[in-house]
Image 1 (cartoon, one colour):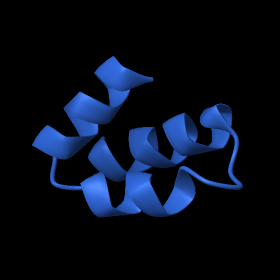
Image 2 (cartoon, helix red, strand yellow; image 1 turned 135 degrees about the vertical axis):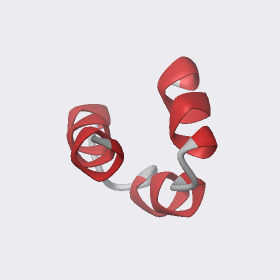
Image 3 (cartoon, helix red, strand yellow; image 1 turned 120 degrees about the vertical axis):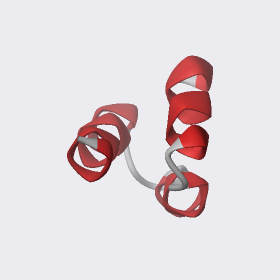
Image 4 (cartoon, one colour; image 1 turned 90 degrees about the vertical axis):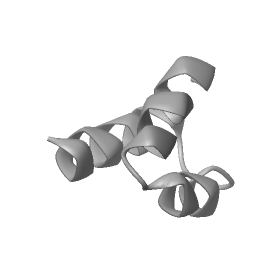
Length: 38
């Protein structure tokens, strides 16, 4: 998750990751990040 988060930060979506980090599962965060970064 840390590596994924770093990749997302480079893509400029760190705020979204922080937002979804709480009640949202890691799988959901990764899927959202994949769609957002692709």
